[in-house]
Image (cartoon, each protein chain N blue to C red):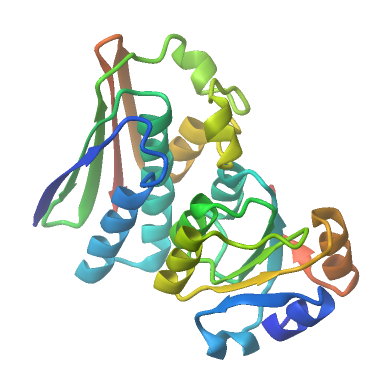
Length: 121
Length: 137
């Protein structure tokens, strides 16, 4: 699923667009969690075509994205970033969005449109 | 080929992960494969988080030899891991509220480090824990 379609389905608003060329990038799967430990555990075997949905909007969410080479993060429940976290998003050139949907609903919307989760086995 | 030491400060939540970020960038500059770098970064970040959250800070030593073997040694200043078997059990955690609010404390740290590393060795005592992991570059 293209980044721009993911953004459209979730009616997500940009917080920071660090790499506009990646709006045409294809994402193969999605991982959703407020626990960055789980993201580190589950995504490390994937390629970098995973979109992260989370309600965890602190510096460590961006640091986790950096370690996993993630470049599209969508914060749920309308969350936005504090100045330190925003600066890190700029440094990493991440595309960072916010959606008003809850984590559950955001997952449901993307899944119903065909985006799958990561392989947890 | 490369030797470097980094200091990790106890309870410095704001800078937690900066050393692992530096390590990843340095290894990228040398030319290591991004897939290996992701595994190294995940292991290093998890271990660095443990040093900030659970230990009294410490030191991270990185060594890259001429054959491309990357070794990371995380040497903290205590207080040690009381029950290493429990600490290696998925989901078991003693993380505090502050750490949990930052998205950590899922009880996957050591388990995850071992999973992504090529070699894993841990020794712990009240004086400190020494975690040594390596990756074939």
